[in-house]
Length: 337
Image (tube, rainbow, N blue to C red; front, top):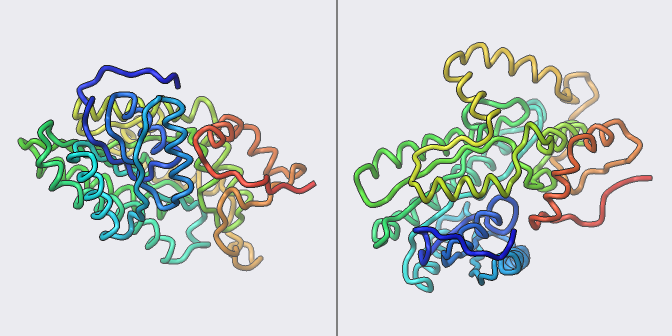
């Protein structure tokens, strides 16, 4: 991304982006900075935030602020909103982007996985919205709130059930808030991206046969036709904010899936059932015992000679490059000879 400014009615506004230190949140922060916003990036990891802020400044020529904040903590989110408003002279634009992804068959999960997804994705969106709305109502420019949902919230995706449940709740939150702010100065935009090449497969959590789950997820998320370039997705999100759009679904595949589910939900559920049978089986299903702990993608052993790594490399090259570009943590590669 060239360090050029983009003419926009967002220029001069104060913006807060949660989950802003890497991936889509990082790109949204950069796009808002390009449009002249005074951006505050919020995330849990202070070091990652500093790297992210430097990344944005290098690519846009704009200095951004940071706020260490766990969106699951209501008090921390309120403090981040207050800090942003105090040092930026108000709060005009807020993007609730923070989230987690758990990839595993439901047989390899317990209720804790659902609680974690709901606390981070849905609870984080609720905390961000409720903390920021009082400031957005006072914005002279008219406040803008953006909630990042997912195609996984429009229909349940096999092996992504906690994620789908939480994103569905975010979608309902966005629709409800939009209805309740109708005719007022605050607009609410809900964005449902499809697969994006953000490098998030390294941060996602995998259970069951974790290496096989990692293989299919990272290959599909990086496939050129199926997935979307994350920088282009960020531009679409910011344009939706500029235009105060109500609802945006990114990628043709996501729009088709959402439409099909709305028209023929039973048929889509049956197709999802067929897809689920093609995905890795839970270890419990064949008597080989529990699937073990949840493992983040960057910690999975990826032996180069295994079929799972060969499958992963077929589609994941672009996603791996995205991880290196967008501040996703990549420690020494966990590969075997």
